[in-house]
Image 1: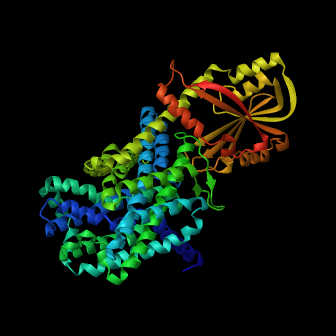
Image 2: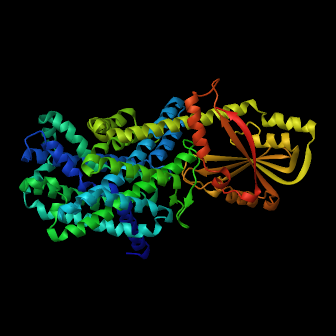
Image 3: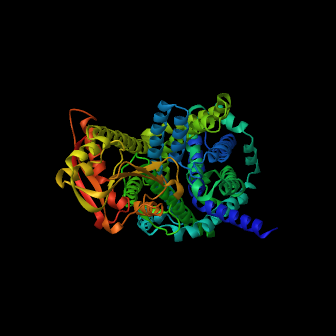
Length: 630
């Protein structure tokens, strides 16, 4: 074997181990509670723990993992990368681009709505996952002593606060330990399962999907309710696609097929065999897989695994918010970069504290993983349906599959997802309302933000066009001053508000004036060759377009260095940046309803300062105010 081939294999193995730590944290902690909740749902109203019930539930778990994770995500969804990046908003951007190229504009608008809904549902999942995972891990201490029961909630709260407090320091150093810990976790899952399958080898019959069908057919409403609990086994499947940009397809696929999936299946089979031979073990079949002396180490390892699972969704929420801001569906938010080498490792303080508050509230309200399980699933199933819908668009208009072939592949998957969603909707009154309420609020906020920014852009049409403004300058002959003025503007057809205000109040024009428009493309990253484009308007004005991908840091100063490299004369010591500071007021006469006006104004006021967001030198920034209505 050559050194190159050996290096590639070593790199692939390293990435696969890394993906085990980051990608599979959520789905990897599902055995803590998923089988228990499924069996409780299946047996509570159907004669207790019987062989047909156990085989039916186990077969449903096995084939849910195979169909949703292996077939849908590993085989198809991972193929739909947007220049190597994944996630619901990446998929939205890719779908929108495909529909626009095919002149299906109405479809593009629907995809935008789907993307916002999927993003909102992900935030709901980001709150529930840390809460249920940490609670389920800490609850294992009650097997050692009942005296610990009153301390479950306080201990979980302390762990959650600790997780969110360390976010500002970044995850780069901690991430080095994620892979080995989760490799150990999955190995222990497999060993626990193998150790007990021999208790009742009959559980191996569950490989036959007929047991799943028989359970669904003969157990009526109970089987429908059980589906909602079965779905807990695949929560976290979205992470396979969301973290695509960090590890690429092959390591994620290898880790799932050859390590993660076998470990999960063995553990579930072991839990089933244990419960079949000792029905009372249904109270906590996961921890009872292990001998008494291993309980404390298992609680510690479980807690570490759940912390890692929580870390994955928290950092996912940071990345999603950053993407949403770049794509214009949320206001700008302050971003801190926690790694000098990995631009994707970011920290958003506002998102961090909002998530922490939500997780603490959920733990305080529900107080146990069993109670919180009722709130779990709705957000994830909704996201999976949205993902499937947009994947269908990709199949049809990017991969150029025929419509019958798309329907043959995706319609059965869509029906399965709808069945799981319907089953989870039965839990709305028991706690499922939590992600629904939270997601609805976020969707409304996103819609208001998109509509409000559109209304503000419309108002600029009442201002001078840049052509009419330049024509007037030929007659007014303003006083000239040395240096360069850079005006940030999003509407290329009209004169920037800051420029109009500067002329109105200061009545001066700089020797060199740049109208700078920042463009956020539907691609995650752009090369420096595609970063800058220049259009000369006349001897006074130059229009510069600076392009960024939606995963990139919009650093204007770095972009200006590229501008200078292209031969553009620019002395930064004689350059001023002019920014419009808008004061927005509500209006009853036009635009949005007044209540939406106030929501939009609150969001606009919370937006990160433009100068810091675009990395402008604070001593060179001039802000000029203007009042606008929405």
